[in-house]
Image (tube, rainbow, N blue to C red):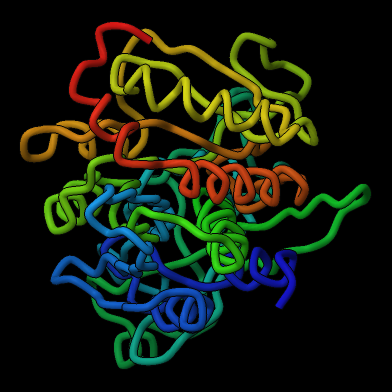
Amino acid sequence: MELKDVVMKLSDAYGVSGHEANSAELVMSLFKDLADEIRVDRMGNIIMLKRGSKPETAKVMLAAHYDEIGMIVKRIEQGGFLRVAQVGGIDQRILPSMEVIVHGRKDIPGVFSACPPHLQTDEDRKKAWKMDDLVIDCGYGEDELRKLVRVGDIVSFRRKCIELANGRLAGKSMDDRCCLAAIWQCATELKKMEHDADVYYVATVQEEITYGGGLTATFGIMPDIGIAVDVGFAAMPGISDDDADKMGEGPNAETAPDVNRKVFGKIRKVASDYGINLQVSASGRPGGTDAFPMQTTGAGVATAILGVPVRYMHTSVETLELEDVKKCGRLMAYFCASVDKEFKEGLTCCLKS
C-alpha cells in the first residue's frame, strides 16, 4: 500500500475521542506486517512492538493519537432534531450546513441547521453561530428518530479525503491520523533496517479531551525515549510566520520545556545527516500534545515532539502535503536506528546538550 492510500484511509475512518474502536481494526490491519506484536490495552491504545536486535539497548515509543474531534447527542427535540455537545475543540464557525453521521443503532446521515440569511437580523448576520443555537436534521420525525438515536450517541463529520494540486490532501481528522501515517512510513522503512532498540508504534486515544491515552500507554511501556508525533500549524494568510511552518519543507520539531535536549539534538543531527530539512519551533510552556503526559509518567521519559504542518486545523478540511508526512516517517526511522546503549545512558544527565 502507498503512503497516500494510508493517509486517505485513516482520514476517512471514524473514531471520536472515547469511541475510537470504529477505527481500531483499520489501524491494526495497516501495521500487521510491520510489527512483531500488536495489542490493545484497557484504554483502547493500540501498542505495536517492533523488536530490536539488542532489546536491552533501549525502548523507543513513537505515539500519535487516532481519536478525532466530534459531537455527542445530548437531547432529541420535538420535530426530530438533535441537540449535541462538542467532543474536543471544534471550530464552531464551520458547523452550519456541515454534513454529519449520527452513529446510533445504525449510521444515519444528517446536516447541521442553518437559518437562512434572509430571516436573520442585521446583528445576527455579523455573529458566528454557537453550538447551542444549532441542531442536526436527519430527516426523521421525532418518533422515528427516537427508535434509532439515543442520548449519548456519537456524531462524526461526514467528509471524504480529497486530493488537491501539488501532492496535497484535504480531509477530516488529519489531526492526528496523518502522523499515525508517518509512523506507518517509519515502520515500513525500519523493517528494512538493522536497529538495536525495541521500537513501539503507539496509536493513542483521547488526546483531544484528556491526554489519557498518552499517559496510560506510556505507563504500560515505560520507554526510555518517547516521541509525540502530532500536527503543527502550516503557513497561510492571516497566520504569523512565528506560529507556522511551511508546507512542503519537511517535518517540524518543537523545542519546549517538555522536550529532552539530548533527544532533540539527536533528531536534529539525524535530519542533517540524511538530508531531511527540519523546521524548528519553540514554545515557552508544555502542553497541547501527548508529550507532557509522556514526559511525566513514572520516573520520567526523555521526550521529543515531531510533527507535520497542517492547515485549517480542527475543521473537516485539514490540509497537508504528503511529502512532509513521508519525510517525518523517514526521519523517525533513521532516529530509531541510531539509538544505541551509549546514547540511552547519556540521557540520565541532560544538563548539557
